[in-house]
Image 1 (tube, rainbow, N blue to C red):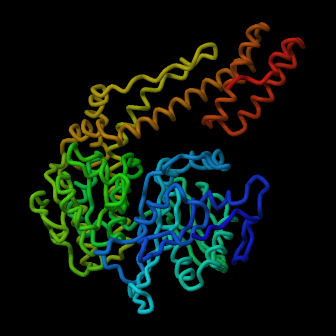
Image 2: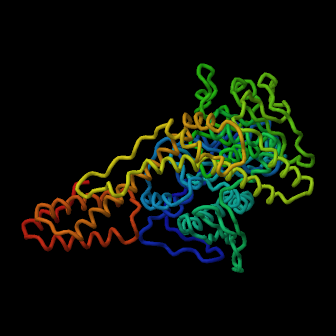
Image 3: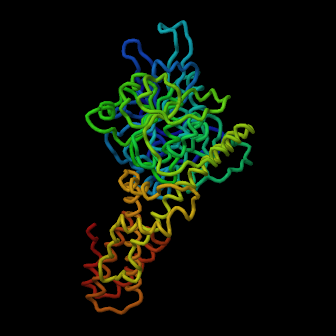
Length: 566
């Protein structure tokens, strides 16, 4: 395998303005902010799938990448196919950019945060007839490995790099890597201009929903209004009569398997399922494309225990038998055949799923908590009959899911906010007060007057849905995150209380020394944990502490100028 060593970033200039090297960044730091590595996987008659070229090191994940980068043989993917996969990271290692990327991640919406325990693989697979080869086919994949869930962006990037690579081979790949190593980091709230392979991509890294990107620059060749969203309507089209039930299953973290004819349809559908509860983060595992070679294959297919909270996307017919004990199975047909309207089918019983050739549909014994929303179905059906543009259908469905999730989560947000102590209870002379504990029954009582009925017209057993949700990994992940944010807010308020006390009040030498020591410890904590304090507060506080220290006797100054213990 040809390995590219670290070197000077440079090489071929692309159209547009590349960032000049920054002394704060090491070689390949900028590349690492976007990608872990780029590799090429080919088919060897003796070895099977094998990594042929690797741009950056991938020793910790080579086997997983090899098996996940090719469609199953039964998929019959001729021509060019794009899909993505996700796999566990063997060992978590901090890069030299770690703190900077953590800071960028803090401000990113949950759907755009780096995946701390997994890698994403974005694949451009080409299979074409070639009589000069023993197998009779040219089969090769160009794969981008990243911690970023930017599916739309990386698929667009591959459309630029892969065709040129298949034609010109390695020099083209190295030039692309040099371009990427001069990109600015993907920080939220910025519109980035990214030169690559002689063209310029303009992308938005949003705080929340992306605005429309104007394009007045003649050098900009490609404008991406979104970097991560898949086409929900296209993905759910084969089963869109059941979208509300699927939303409940994903919300509750139920075990789901998507059986599809190709990795492209499998991965798109799994990503659509995960994103349908946005802005809530899906906290369980999900695998857009899962194969029998995955390291978690035995763990996820065992019959000795209940199926885990995970969403799997599969294409191998073997899974029809291996996973037939799973409680919820979605069978997706060929998404290219969208001429006819999807038929209104009832949810099928699991015993009717015999093989992967079974008819498309949802196979489950699940009974939804909420009554079916017929309005959204009629609205989408009307759009199909009137040949409404796919982008408009997608926007309608995305807004529906967003409003449904927000109606569900707002009562929880309101109740959790009430667990925060009153600001007047925060004293500079005491430790920050504790948050009140989450009380399930107390929360349930709040739903009578401040439940989802305030924002949603849907009827049904909302109480039952909440009780089930409170047992799910999604609630656990959401509450842990909210609790962490609130604890940091308490620490920030306590820091400000200490600051006010030092600035306003007159104190004895002993009290002043005590306050200064507390504040120095708080400053270390604020920088380490990135507490949500006002811009400039820490710098002003540091200056004020220095002023107070200089007003003390010299012996105390010497003590207080010693570094604090973290």
